[in-house]
Length: 330
Ligand code: CUA
Image (cartoon, rainbow, N blue to C red; front, side, top):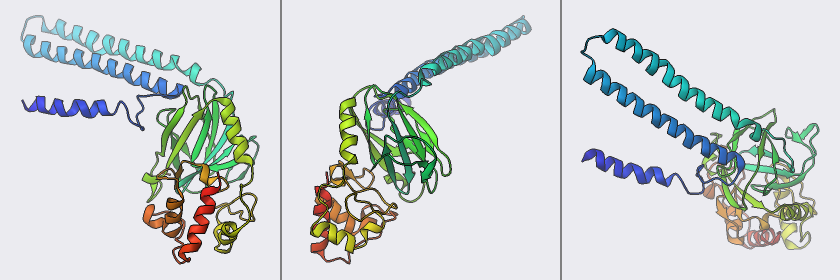
């Protein structure tokens, strides 16, 4: 009975892992699809080995004390110890290696540079390659943060790096993880197979706020991707008035860029179109004027360990004006 209770508890727990936003078994990308297939094949292989070992154990225990045991033992070693594992492992290796050519096809889509930072993701769309100038990554590109748009059905090359510690870029539904390593550029080619919004996260412990270093992938048709990047390339919609004035006077421009204004800091996320993103603070909070104001007031409270200092010393009205302006930048 105890075993049955255990099994009854275990099965729903295991089944729960088959869906949900961080599941690897509900693929929306070529790489993730192959990972899921490989998982099930390996599971079947492990199950076959398990059955075989149980049968072997049973035969050894039940039939051991018999004549001709030496001949039997040799046969067991040959078939059980060499032939069976040899066949199973060879089949798994051939199957796994057979997947490689498809996964190694070169990119035919855009190149996007992504830098893992404490504790958010710097994004530059449509970079040209070339020598690394800005934080190890190719210079240029259209800057954004924390929400990566990808064209469906295209193989997009993602160039990864980091200015501080090792992070790992992971969107479970689309592809396996890839480390972002200081001082070098790693590559990941992804091929999303259906449109939608998919959750991602940093998958390498990088400090206090590692668990809140999330991201979002927005997979759209190719023309929507091009339109989005073109829109992101534009300067901010509103560059004059009390909002940008207070933003600059409060020193926000030392760390953040809002293109079209003198704010050109490179420490924190580019805020030129921050109001158009669906989330705030590396995809942990819903985007709204209220959460923007809360974050300006006390980022440590919402995201302990964040590098941005709080601006709660500003008059409440000024925080509201800055938040309203940022929220309007779509
Ligand atoms: Cu970045 Cu964990």
